[in-house]
Length: 198
Image 1: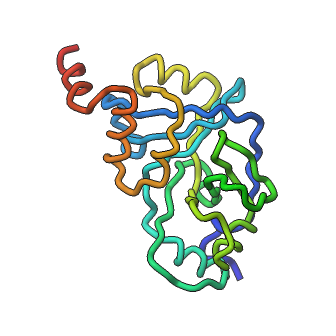
Image 2: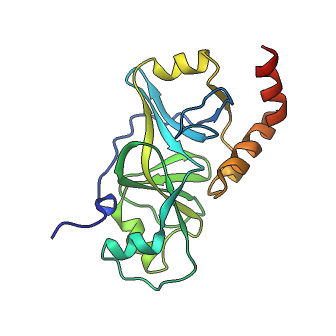
């Protein structure tokens, strides 16, 4: 029988290099999905770039996906799931804080203190209460073709900064975006005023 939620199928993602950078959508970026988005960029090279949107919450919660994937668990308080981007939305990736615990297959260090796994085993452990303490399940990812992201940055669509762990796992899209702007010493009003005066 076909699973109702194939995003829980094991689908390892090939990661060639990790280049952690945070992308913050400029107000001029009015794309419906990426407007006010904050992206953790992890893969960048001649082949293009890829990462995950950190502040888009999915319309289903973790309990629903674990149940749909046939993973027995004790239902508890609703835990959000995030939409990592429009590429391969059927694939699930887990970002989790590295607290010295278990390592998983297809598990890589994104940056000190943060790891990424495409393993189904991490979800099995989560379902049994043995998984990472602080984590997020992301469905899909963001991607750009060769030179595409560089062009968008040059056009002013994205601001860049060092990744901030305290921006992970926020559930309010605009609040996370504003916090990211403040980490650059900017605020929303200043940016919109700059656009109006341009």
